[in-house]
Image 1 (tube, rainbow, N blue to C red):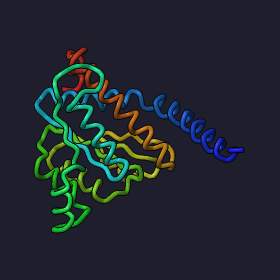
Image 2: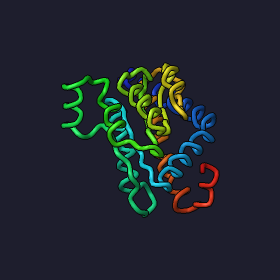
Image 3: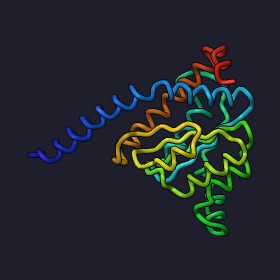
Length: 202
């Protein structure tokens, strides 16, 4: 009884644990560099813009909430905007231009040199995400990409890119949110516990 269901749970948890261990062993230093880059931007008056579609849109909003609100540490609010939340802007741009422009148009409107764009795409092929990265490049905004095994074109466009080495969307998303949590915690460490280390990213 429930044999198939137990096998599904077993497979997902086992594969997820293996993937998680491999990913963080290979990318720990890059995650530190990404957090340091964002922290340095914030110190200089920059902000974090975040975008994604579907589950990645939820991750974008989650990250913005952790920064504007707080993660673990009690500290001042940090400037972050999820580009996925304003329905009037999203529907206006989609209707008057194209859905592929919903994030790039916002980057062009509110992004400034010195900001950071965090672009999240499990496939790495979402046109609206790729366009947002290109718009950020035009404004000298640093770009950080979170993607999966198919996101090669995506990676080539980003200043920093984290690739989860699987094509399983659920497992990619589970690791993406872990990365977001770690980046938020490390930003707090850089800004409020070890400020002197920011010189590494100046």
